[in-house]
Length: 109
Figure (cartoon, rainbow, N blue to C red):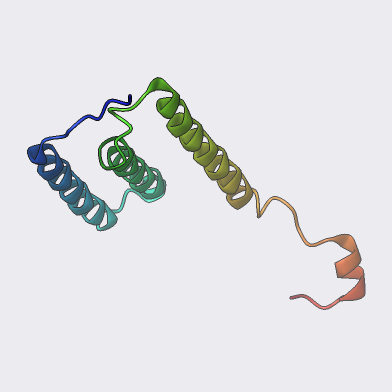
């Protein structure tokens, strides 16, 4: 028979308050100019909020180690997607226009 963990209602209220506080922090950081640091700070806050939702509202915290493994695999996959996206974004300006395009269109853009 499976065991069910009953979470007190106060835990949900505290988690909700923490999520609201982190939402206010996200809005506050958006108004501060951190230069290149705005995106990493916003992503860190978003990942923290997502982990809180997964741990408490999806009951991963009180589940089996196999469920922890699946949740970690999901986060690892998200990390891979974010790294590949950032790699594409940061390397877009490294190359100029292809030579074939410049030969076919001698006028500048």
